[in-house]
Image (cartoon, rainbow, N blue to C red; front, side, top):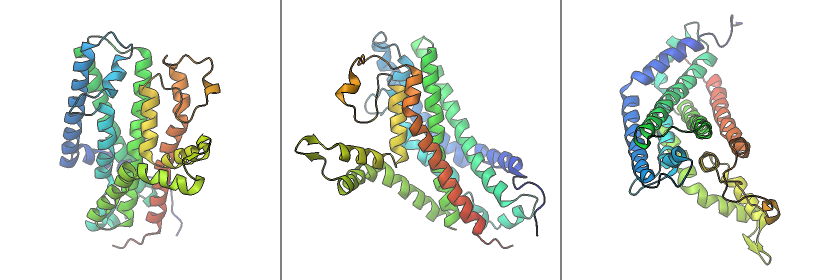
Length: 317
């Protein structure tokens, strides 16, 4: 039978309902409390160090995000660790939870198609994640204004805004991974463990696996003339298959304005460059545009894989 109406009918209703459930749920509140407390503690520790050396850098608010004071890591290091966990917690039972509660067939019996249901659930998770991150960003900026006594300049706002968008995209990748396993596995615990396993592979083991694969494809890292350029390029390409690497490179280029390259650089390319001087913000964005594109492409790829599998599943009342 031919379906009447748009396949996206009901996306708004699903988005509103699921977002309200995320923001009002106990799970989300506990996750937000954990993230907020640890991130604010790291930012406060960085502010204490910055206040002692307030005249040494024109980018005080960027240092607030990147500076670490033992025993706490930096603000961005905490985000890189916690954001995947938050995204996985939001999505590991998005679809299989409906199966287990036997509510999926009832939902689809309404004028809501599978397309709209899956897209609405994914966008609601991404929106809840974005709301939490924007709130955290505003809290950190407010804390900096209160304790440093100076406002951020325009370049700092642009760089921090770009990094915020990259953080949301980074979280979207892991949310899409969690959605994919939520569709593949009927047990939420299995889906959560599978998503966490993928995250652990890229977070802990991929920096070890990538050089080994680069040696296999491009030969040893050094030859008789010194470092092998083929090996360096192969290692860089393989490392960038990890969302963690892409996110780290975006953080490096946007939050450290003196960064001029993210790969091997020849001496001839440095002629005339004022090393140590900050790069214009437009050039920093151009430098990490491929990394931005890679994160968004990975998010779309995992969502499309889950979408195809969900469309092929049989759903019975």
